[in-house]
Image 1: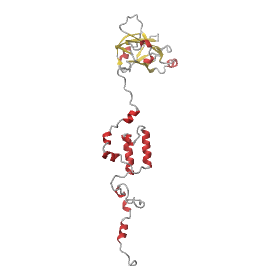
Image 2: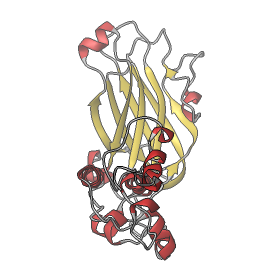
Image 3: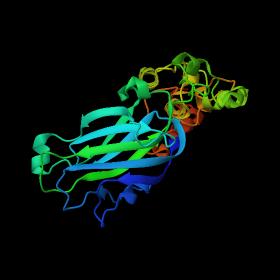
Image 4: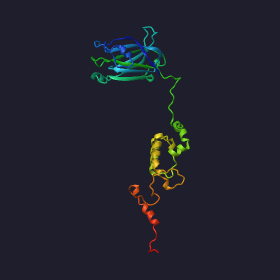
Length: 285
């Protein structure tokens, strides 16, 4: 699907000197081609020469006040008396009500091979003739803002199909070599010793957002980092002893009774050690 450039204008029926027909050759399409204000025929015709003879697969037309449009194709080698073939039969670009109220003048119509007549499909053309008319408004100017021509899709170079969901699930993530490192896995994907309810809910929500992630290792990198951050508070590092005192995130009295609110220095641990060293009273003797 390649664009076909319009090389020059072969002929035209009318133009406004302020908006000449050569505006159709510009790629930007900022200034339209409009008919002469004194022309009362209410019909415009332009014949364009394409840069090369090629099959036509798409025609995009920018409207500027036309009610109907008719597109024909031909070849520069044909004699003048030979009629052109109809590519797109007469189509409406504006409704009669919009034409009379001068509303919705500017629009774009995109024609494809399904809209073309069968005799003109699949052949090579280098001439394009467009006939536009506006019978519902007797005073306003009308014309076209741009014309774009493109070839059909090349059957020898079809577009690659989109990857299937199964292929995406079976594909190895880009960070696969990192996940093969035991140290990396222990740091970012530690084995949970006791999965909390909140962690399971978070994991379930992340997998719902990413349907292809049937395991935590298949989650995207941002999702895995969120899950790893949630585990950092619930998991203890592997110290080998399994003692509670080895966890820097747990309070020192987590193994015993309830924690005392307030700063750590307010916990009365020193008096307890003092009572253990106190000698027996004389009464006890």
